[in-house]
Image 1 (tube, chains in turn cyan, blue):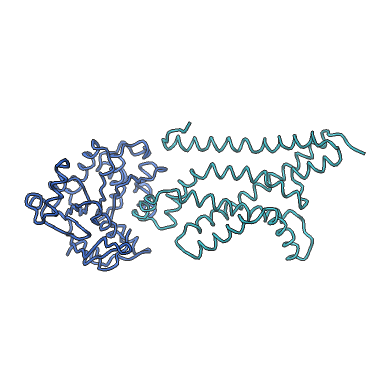
Image 2 (cartoon, rainbow over the protein chains, first blue to last red):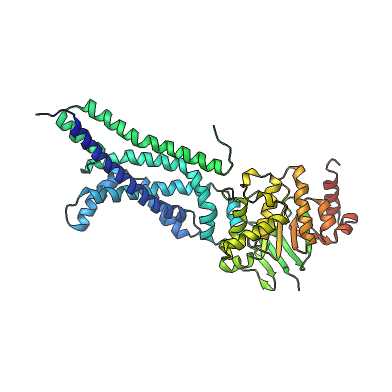
Length: 223
Length: 246
């Protein structure tokens, strides 16, 4: 027997949306820390660091995120010897995935800073870490905003893959509701709207942040 | 004792020799103008003096000590060697004041209040104290180069290097930068300048160095060298510079 799509079903979806947000946030923050380390390693003068970071990024970008998810899920189960909750597996997989992509995005942003800025920083004469902190990274940050936010939006939508190993985020919750209501043309459009309501404000906020930085620095607005 | 002593410097990129057996002493308070055609090695020479380029052979002795190859030792030496580049490279995300206080506060670990006082002092030296809180994009090219000079001076260097700092400027902005350079020279600063401003070189420099094919081709007091070049290469260069349509 089937249920209608009513308030309790809607609230169930909203509850699941919370897990989409939490998973995205952890992956983005954890991946951000990892990505920063990777980006700095990729642009450092130490060949071994560069190679290690490049290898990691290459492996993560060269394999499907679904496979990484399976590996994290079954890998953790094998390592710990118990059948585990999908929660640690999805956070681990998405954090490692985000680190690789953010690392590559931010490497590009660092490389976009003219060589003369490094030289000017070395001339006053800042140590390498201070050159990064006070001169290079703040400028790279401005350049990195659009692609970083673009990736964050992809990440949020990408967490729907976690539904495959039984992690109940928004998409999985939608499937469960469809199974009992048989109303896919009500549930799935609603889920699409919920994803959109999450992602659209983020893109808008990023645009405002860019404009605010440019205005503070006296940079002319692009149309 | 010279403040800076370059002995038999060689530098090559692959098989291309850019500096060939260059030797030069710079005494305290001396102003050396380096001129020459593009590709003659003058910019590379300047960059070698503060270790931005590594020499292949020879020696650089600054203040009685060999210039270290890199690391914290080279940074220590660079605290006393200021450089201003041709490209406008203030830090665009920092105010004029922060551009200037960054070196003193971070490198020299000076209290911010003291660094700010110095920032105001050095900005006065370049006549830009009213631009303390401006951002680089709000300044003209000439003003940016004057702030770059102030940024270098804030470290209280013993030697200042200038790499064609007026070459990227519109012609009407060259004068204000040259005026600052002349004032600095008069104040007793030891300076090595790569320049295309022949009038400045003639008026202000103590020594003129003409570079050609990676060598110091001719060296002497500027007035004499301009009036009576000893080599046909310098004679040709002066003619080409003073009357480009000739």
